Every structure is written in structure tokens, then in C-alpha cells.
Image 1: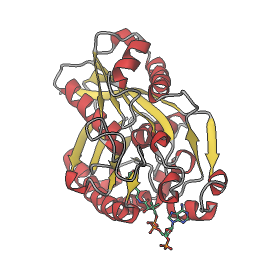
Image 2 (image 1 turned 120 degrees about the horizontal axis):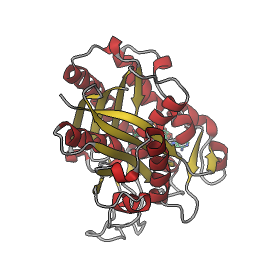
Image 3 (image 1 turned 135 degrees about the vertical axis):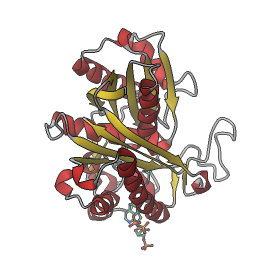
Length: 322
Ligand code: UT7
């Protein structure tokens, strides 16, 4: 059996830190509200001219260097994002060229906040079927570019950032199981109303912005993630007490705590970065994974449960032996 093994991780964040106190100055909110409702204390915001591709490139370079893999050795670059640099070419193609990995397949996956988990699932299957030996999987966003800074309900929630992993085919696990799902019936609860085909000005004349019915998203997210972690354990033929670390999507600390509770895991076994990064959509899980690896918490041989939930709705997970 061939598995996809994570050789190394990388990440990149914009320099500029925006705290809750900074946001108090532009919308009617408070540090106390943001912290208690979401767990967020600060977020990073991309500089003018700094793109999703720039962040993705930095995360990828770090992961490749730590993996000891040359860009020319890659067979695949797959990048989860909902904020690509251009409509086309795919940001994965732009990053592939800047890395010097020209020639291998490269494409983006848009699954909103589940983008990295979807990209990981796709790369895993290419490796398992023997078509790819080494893959670069990236989750990268400049989500704040589509934030309406006058809407306190949403502007406090998001941030920019990127994370990456290098995968290689191995006889040893590896990614043990992945589960990918979507239900487009929930499209009206979390979406961006504009696009190439429908046009870039919506009926309210707001242009690009995130529209979210937060309370409803919250409820569906908790219920769906409960079912997803059960499904993942079953697919991996494992019990919850065999998981060393939960590395969840970083949207809201209360959602993360609910999933940990479902698994009977203490918060000491959960990687939390939402306080520092806020919700970076596709960037969130690989940023958390990289933070966990670099801080020495995640060690070789440990079992990690990665999961995400986002617009679509989409939801996806992976059980990984690191
Ligand atoms: O990554 C993709 C998936 N997205 C998510 O997972 C997000 C899921 N949803 C959430 O995380 C939460 O629902 C939010 C953080 C978005 C909102 O928290 P909540 O506890 O569900 O608050 P709420 O929407 O029920 O609003 C409670 C109150 C409202 O005031 P009233 O009607 O009770 O007077 C809001 O107007 O809080 C008010 N409010 C705020 N107050 C201060 C909403 N946003 C703010 C704000 N500052 N930024």
C-alpha cells in the first residue's frame, strides 16, 4: 500500500498585526465581545500589493527547504484558496513558476474554508494511485481583501495567511483517511455575492464582500463537525483516544471546543491559533499545523485529526500519522 507522508510544513503571515483594540476604532465593537464570542485577539493583514500568491510562495519555500525537496522534484502543486491573485491563471500556476517547478500539474481548489483540506484530499489520492510521487499542497488567502470594514458582524472575524505541506509517497502512513463533503443547499448562509459571471456589483452596490448569517453557520458547523469526526475515526479504523492532536479549522474557539468535547479530548491536545490569526479560511489548518510542528508539540509518529468547515457549505477532514 502506498501512503502520502507529510515530509515538512511551512507557513507565512503578513507583517501587519491588527488587534481588537484597533478594530474598536473603526466599528462599534469591543475587545471583550470579540474575545468571548470568537477567541480572536488579533489578526494579520496583507500589505498593499501583497498577494495570496506571495504568501503561498513563502510558505511553500519554507516547507520545501525543510523537506529537502527541490521544486524540480515536484509532480504536483495544488493550492486551496478563495482569494486567488487573478481569475486565471490559477495561483498554483503562478507559485509553480516562481518556485521553478515548471511542467508539473498545478491547479487551485476553491472550497472556501475547507480549501486546504480538499487540496490535501486530492493530492493524497494522486499519490495513493501512484500518479504522483511528490506534491506541494498549499492553503493561502488574503481574505481581508473581501471584508467590508463597516460591517462589525464579519470584519472582526478574518485574517490573511498561508500554510503548506510537502507530501511524498511512502510505504508507511502517512495520511490514513480523508473525508470530503459539500452541500450547496446552504449557499445563502455564507457567500460572496459577486463574480465574473454574475458581475462585480450586487444589488446593494457593495461589490466584493463576505456575507454570513453567523448564528446559523455556527449551529450547522458544530453539528456537521461532530458527524465528520465520527466518520473520520470510522474511516481510519481508530478510536478517539488514539488521537494525539486535534488541528481544527480556526474560525471560532467555541466551535473548536465543541469538537474537542465530542472527541473527549482536553484543550491541551488541541492546536489553537485563532487568537493570533483569526479565520484565514484555507490558510487556517496548515498555519495551525505548522505552528504545532515548529513549537515541537507535534512529533513524528503521532496521530493528528485535521478538519475544516466553510462556505458551500464544504467540510473535510484527514487522519494523519505525522
Ligand atoms: O469559517 C467559516 C465558517 N464560519 C464560522 O464558523 C462562523 C460561525 N459563526 C460564529 O462564529 C458566530 O456566530 C459569530 C462570531 C459570527 C457571532 O457570534 P454569536 O454569538 O453567534 O453572535 P450573534 O450573531 O448572535 O450576535 C449577538 C449580538 C447581536 O446583538 P443583539 O441582536 O443581541 O443586540 C449582534 O448585533 O452581538 C452583536 N454583534 C456584535 N457586537 C459587538 C455582532 N457582531 C458584533 C461585534 N461587536 N463585532
